[in-house]
Amino acid sequence: MMAKSEAQTRSELIDQQLASAGWNVKDPTQVVEEFDILTGLPEGVAEPLTLYGGHQFSDYVLLGKDRKPLAIIEAKKSSRDAAIGREQAKQYCYNTQKQLGGELPFCFYTNGLETYFWDLENAPPRKVVGFPTRADLERFTYIRRNRKPLTQEFINTSIAGRDYQLRAIRSVLEGIEQKKRDFLLVMATGTGKTRTCIAMVDTLMRAGHAEKVLFLVDRIALREQALSAFKEHMPNEPRWPNVGEKLIAKDRRVYVATYPTMLNIIRDEAQHLSPHFFDFIVVDESHRSIYNTYGEVLDYFKTITLGLTATPTDLVDHNTFQLWPTDFCLHLRGGRKQRAALPEQFSGYENPDQVPNGGHQQAHHFIGRSEKADSAR
Image (cartoon, rainbow, N blue to C red; front, side):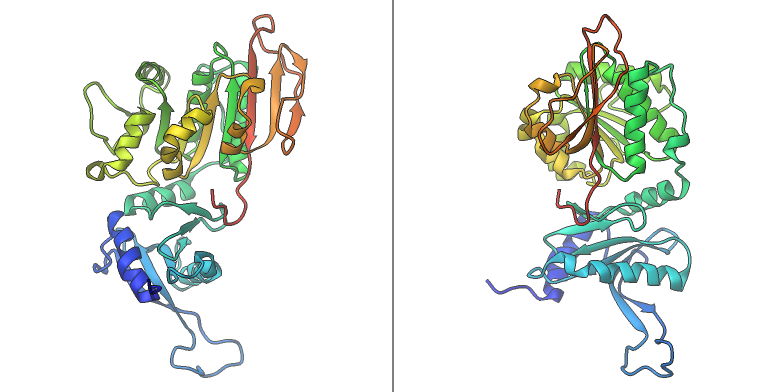
């Protein structure tokens, strides 16, 4: 089969992917192709040496409702590595901001087969399933503009006030500030892991870091419990589903679903849900068997993710650590300082805090690793 040219890659692959995200590439109020970026001539050069000297041309610019650039897309033909366009896309973003003023556009580079999203100055590039909708990009812009430092945000201790709960929450919040994206929290049954997560969600929303949150569970009974807990502790946040709701509603803030329900939604074209729809995902009972069955859900939504499990560390399949790679572990067991049973590539972190109830319960939290440039996860 003949390799596609860049023009074919754009018309046959990228244009269709943009259309799936709600963009009409033929509507100049939504998408501008071959966007002309004026860069000026190098110092000491009085006249352009070529017809297009002092100009750059971005393959696509995605516009907001106010007609201002939200994102730049650099396209390469499908036979080339998408990463070749990375620095070019970065230049176009900065030069567009320099030319038009306003906020720095989000950066995308793609070959039609692989697409990378780069929130310049805020996070490393990451591979994503598809392009965001206009609503997604406008939400990202709002969050970037209005979020507050998480290290200064208070935690509602009426939701989760035990010392080890506060330490777990604070450590994850600090990890997010450090641009980490994957976290694993291991807490024994009875130590309040659901309340710990709700307090974390409450903090992220109040600080403006999350507008839409997904809480994934493996059973309907747990879904009902989680919905009741969110209703009790965050009563003013609209939740999905309400009683009797079957189809996904896109105007809520807190979503609680079973893995099969969410898998069906992302596979159902009639209920199309953007892969950028959520800002934070909590995955209950995070272990290898869940990932093997429903990994498609986690691969689809590439956002900040917190895995939860009540399984003691020494019983967790070490492959779990590959699903939520970690930098270090705070291991609390009966008040004694012990290192966690981590794979060799992970370092242990000792902590002297006590867990209540006579030392029979355990609480652990694992801090997720920061993404490296061009992470393919």
